[in-house]
Image 1 (cartoon, rainbow, N blue to C red):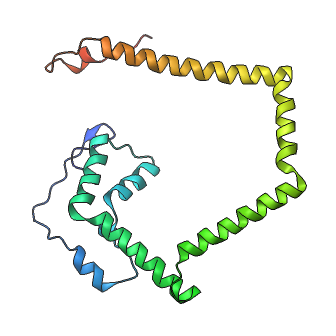
Image 2: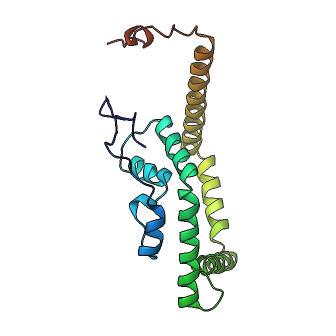
Image 3: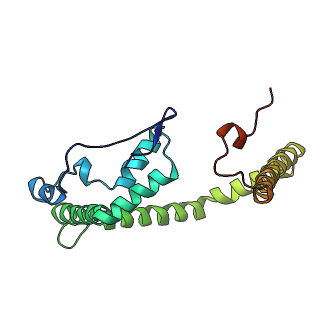
Length: 186
Protein backbone atom coordinates (compact mmCIF):
# COMPACT_ATOMS: atom_id res chain seq x y z
CA UNK A 1 0.00 0.00 0.00
CA UNK A 2 2.85 2.42 0.79
CA UNK A 3 4.88 1.59 -2.32
CA UNK A 4 5.53 4.87 -4.11
CA UNK A 5 4.82 6.99 -1.03
CA UNK A 6 7.30 9.40 0.49
CA UNK A 7 8.89 9.65 3.91
CA UNK A 8 10.95 12.73 4.79
CA UNK A 9 11.29 13.50 1.09
CA UNK A 10 12.49 10.02 0.10
CA UNK A 11 10.36 7.83 -2.15
CA UNK A 12 9.43 4.47 -0.62
CA UNK A 13 9.77 1.26 -2.61
CA UNK A 14 8.13 -1.71 -0.92
CA UNK A 15 8.84 -5.14 -2.41
CA UNK A 16 8.92 -8.76 -1.28
CA UNK A 17 11.05 -11.67 -2.45
CA UNK A 18 8.20 -14.09 -1.78
CA UNK A 19 4.61 -14.10 -2.92
CA UNK A 20 2.32 -13.91 0.11
CA UNK A 21 -0.93 -15.84 -0.04
CA UNK A 22 -4.12 -14.06 0.90
CA UNK A 23 -4.52 -15.32 4.47
CA UNK A 24 -7.63 -13.42 5.53
CA UNK A 25 -9.84 -16.52 5.65
CA UNK A 26 -7.47 -18.24 8.10
CA UNK A 27 -7.92 -15.43 10.63
CA UNK A 28 -11.72 -15.64 10.53
CA UNK A 29 -11.71 -18.99 12.34
CA UNK A 30 -8.71 -18.69 14.66
CA UNK A 31 -9.78 -15.76 16.84
CA UNK A 32 -13.42 -14.80 16.24
CA UNK A 33 -13.27 -11.86 18.68
CA UNK A 34 -9.93 -10.29 17.67
CA UNK A 35 -9.00 -8.06 14.75
CA UNK A 36 -5.67 -8.77 13.10
CA UNK A 37 -3.84 -5.80 11.58
CA UNK A 38 -4.02 -7.54 8.19
CA UNK A 39 -7.82 -7.68 8.53
CA UNK A 40 -8.25 -3.95 9.12
CA UNK A 41 -9.38 -1.87 6.15
CA UNK A 42 -6.36 -0.31 4.45
CA UNK A 43 -8.16 3.04 4.39
CA UNK A 44 -8.50 2.77 8.18
CA UNK A 45 -4.79 2.04 8.53
CA UNK A 46 -4.03 5.04 6.30
CA UNK A 47 -6.26 7.18 8.55
CA UNK A 48 -4.27 5.97 11.57
CA UNK A 49 -1.03 7.03 9.84
CA UNK A 50 -2.49 10.46 9.03
CA UNK A 51 -3.68 10.86 12.62
CA UNK A 52 -0.13 10.22 13.84
CA UNK A 53 1.20 13.01 11.63
CA UNK A 54 2.44 11.07 8.62
CA UNK A 55 1.78 12.56 5.21
CA UNK A 56 0.31 10.27 2.57
CA UNK A 57 -0.34 11.38 -0.98
CA UNK A 58 -3.74 11.08 -2.60
CA UNK A 59 -2.55 8.21 -4.81
CA UNK A 60 -1.51 6.22 -1.71
CA UNK A 61 -4.95 6.83 -0.17
CA UNK A 62 -6.63 5.78 -3.42
CA UNK A 63 -4.46 2.64 -3.51
CA UNK A 64 -5.64 1.81 0.03
CA UNK A 65 -9.27 2.20 -1.03
CA UNK A 66 -8.67 0.09 -4.14
CA UNK A 67 -7.01 -2.66 -2.08
CA UNK A 68 -9.95 -2.66 0.34
CA UNK A 69 -12.40 -3.00 -2.53
CA UNK A 70 -10.37 -5.63 -4.39
CA UNK A 71 -9.84 -7.87 -1.37
CA UNK A 72 -13.21 -7.19 0.27
CA UNK A 73 -11.48 -6.11 3.48
CA UNK A 74 -13.94 -3.34 4.30
CA UNK A 75 -16.95 -5.59 3.87
CA UNK A 76 -15.32 -8.31 6.02
CA UNK A 77 -14.45 -5.72 8.68
CA UNK A 78 -17.95 -4.24 8.68
CA UNK A 79 -19.44 -7.72 8.86
CA UNK A 80 -17.16 -8.55 11.80
CA UNK A 81 -18.16 -5.34 13.62
CA UNK A 82 -21.85 -5.96 12.93
CA UNK A 83 -21.61 -9.52 14.27
CA UNK A 84 -19.72 -8.26 17.33
CA UNK A 85 -22.37 -5.57 17.92
CA UNK A 86 -25.12 -8.19 17.73
CA UNK A 87 -23.44 -10.91 19.80
CA UNK A 88 -22.36 -8.57 22.61
CA UNK A 89 -25.77 -6.90 22.57
CA UNK A 90 -27.60 -10.20 22.86
CA UNK A 91 -25.36 -11.36 25.72
CA UNK A 92 -25.46 -8.08 27.63
CA UNK A 93 -28.92 -6.71 26.79
CA UNK A 94 -31.06 -9.65 25.74
CA UNK A 95 -32.34 -11.33 22.59
CA UNK A 96 -32.47 -9.27 19.37
CA UNK A 97 -30.59 -6.38 21.04
CA UNK A 98 -27.45 -4.62 19.75
CA UNK A 99 -25.00 -2.34 21.49
CA UNK A 100 -25.41 0.30 18.79
CA UNK A 101 -29.20 0.41 19.17
CA UNK A 102 -28.81 0.79 22.95
CA UNK A 103 -26.34 3.65 22.46
CA UNK A 104 -28.66 5.37 19.98
CA UNK A 105 -31.62 4.92 22.32
CA UNK A 106 -29.67 6.30 25.28
CA UNK A 107 -28.46 9.31 23.27
CA UNK A 108 -31.99 10.02 22.06
CA UNK A 109 -33.30 9.88 25.64
CA UNK A 110 -30.49 12.19 26.83
CA UNK A 111 -31.22 14.65 24.03
CA UNK A 112 -34.93 14.64 24.84
CA UNK A 113 -34.19 15.19 28.54
CA UNK A 114 -31.75 18.02 27.76
CA UNK A 115 -34.34 19.71 25.54
CA UNK A 116 -36.97 19.38 28.29
CA UNK A 117 -34.64 20.91 30.90
CA UNK A 118 -33.68 23.68 28.48
CA UNK A 119 -37.35 24.40 27.86
CA UNK A 120 -38.00 24.63 31.60
CA UNK A 121 -34.90 26.63 32.55
CA UNK A 122 -34.54 28.69 29.35
CA UNK A 123 -30.76 28.24 28.98
CA UNK A 124 -30.84 28.58 25.17
CA UNK A 125 -32.95 31.72 25.37
CA UNK A 126 -30.60 33.34 27.90
CA UNK A 127 -27.53 32.39 25.82
CA UNK A 128 -29.14 33.73 22.65
CA UNK A 129 -29.95 37.04 24.35
CA UNK A 130 -26.40 37.29 25.74
CA UNK A 131 -24.77 36.64 22.35
CA UNK A 132 -27.17 39.02 20.60
CA UNK A 133 -26.27 41.81 23.02
CA UNK A 134 -22.55 41.00 22.71
CA UNK A 135 -22.77 41.06 18.90
CA UNK A 136 -24.48 44.46 18.98
CA UNK A 137 -21.75 46.01 21.11
CA UNK A 138 -18.93 47.98 19.40
CA UNK A 139 -16.39 45.27 20.30
CA UNK A 140 -18.74 42.53 19.05
CA UNK A 141 -19.20 44.39 15.76
CA UNK A 142 -15.42 44.71 15.38
CA UNK A 143 -14.86 41.00 16.02
CA UNK A 144 -17.70 40.04 13.66
CA UNK A 145 -16.35 42.34 10.95
CA UNK A 146 -12.80 41.01 11.36
CA UNK A 147 -13.82 37.35 11.00
CA UNK A 148 -16.28 38.05 8.18
CA UNK A 149 -13.75 40.08 6.18
CA UNK A 150 -10.85 37.72 6.91
CA UNK A 151 -12.91 34.72 5.82
CA UNK A 152 -13.87 36.50 2.60
CA UNK A 153 -10.25 37.46 1.96
CA UNK A 154 -9.10 33.87 2.42
CA UNK A 155 -11.77 32.66 -0.04
CA UNK A 156 -10.76 35.43 -2.47
CA UNK A 157 -7.11 34.33 -2.30
CA UNK A 158 -8.09 30.70 -3.01
CA UNK A 159 -10.31 31.77 -5.91
CA UNK A 160 -7.54 33.94 -7.37
CA UNK A 161 -5.05 31.09 -7.05
CA UNK A 162 -7.43 28.79 -8.92
CA UNK A 163 -8.00 31.44 -11.60
CA UNK A 164 -4.24 31.87 -12.07
CA UNK A 165 -3.72 28.13 -12.18
CA UNK A 166 -6.47 27.69 -14.78
CA UNK A 167 -5.07 30.47 -16.99
CA UNK A 168 -1.37 29.67 -16.58
CA UNK A 169 0.10 27.65 -19.47
CA UNK A 170 1.19 24.22 -18.26
CA UNK A 171 4.94 23.56 -18.37
CA UNK A 172 6.17 20.80 -20.66
CA UNK A 173 6.41 17.33 -19.12
CA UNK A 174 10.20 17.34 -19.41
CA UNK A 175 10.65 20.65 -17.54
CA UNK A 176 12.97 20.47 -14.57
CA UNK A 177 11.67 20.84 -11.03
CA UNK A 178 13.44 24.19 -10.65
CA UNK A 179 11.65 25.55 -13.71
CA UNK A 180 8.24 24.23 -12.67
CA UNK A 181 8.32 25.53 -9.10
CA UNK A 182 8.10 29.25 -8.29
CA UNK A 183 11.15 30.80 -6.69
CA UNK A 184 10.77 32.13 -3.19
CA UNK A 185 11.56 35.74 -2.48
CA UNK A 186 13.72 36.32 0.54
